[in-house]
Image (cartoon, rainbow, N blue to C red; front, top):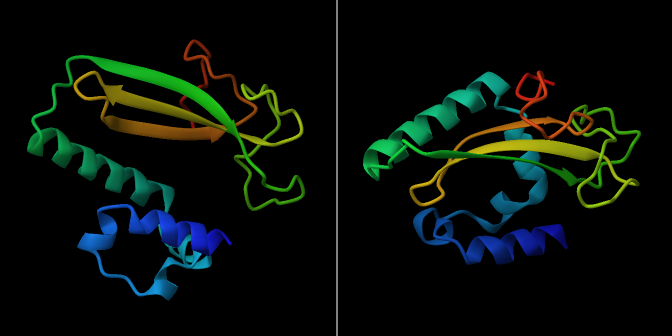
Length: 137
């Protein structure tokens, strides 16, 4: 079912036209296999390079930035120790039965383009005034 939804979604994106992938490459289990190959340091460097190219290619005005802090509920089982970032906390969705992940996102006011992001443990406050809001989990 998840794979069918992923395939349906992929068909609506430009990716389907630009990258010809075999059907089995979009199996949701393949996604997680691929994610295990990228370290957090490598992911940050990928993000940095993509954003730098976007800013230059699209001449984005970065003189105004917006920070959005939020959390979202996950369906990660409480006994799953492979997802230490998912924690119980104050859910904005009022779902005290689910573990949360926090997300900080900086966007440009020039088109609302995401420029940098940081996922953090769901038991941390979403306020940037908190001293540890942007530190590693």
